[in-house]
Image 1 (cartoon, rainbow, N blue to C red):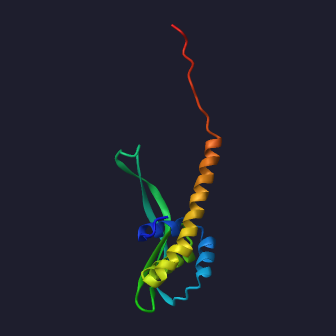
Image 2: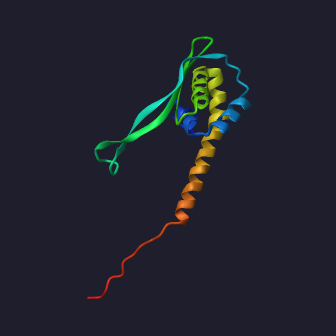
Image 3: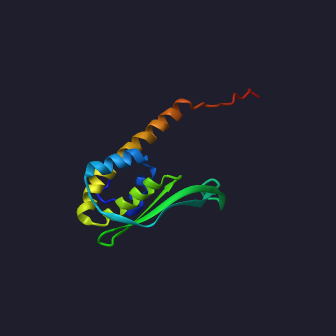
Length: 147
């Protein structure tokens, strides 16, 4: 993991992490930040776009359910959270982590004690899925007749 965690990278990891694991990690930090919801949490739909090949034209693949929330800490710091699905508590917790990460004294702890283990767990999960998929790989070949 690189020393600095960008907000985009942080949001990605928070959204991909299951709520139970995120809540447990956040609780273990012991950061007590009083906050109020400014918007939401609310559930809606978002258009998912696809691309043929990787270089082709973009097209609308379909819609997915998305839940978002915005919170404000007592000092006015705003945080925003988005997660696929309908988990309002997950979106609110992501927004709280985002708001707290705007403060340097909390950001270092959040990145090293929360985000680093979450990123490692997601990497291990992805590697395990890749190994499982590789184990079922079938190589096809064509036998050519001599001419």
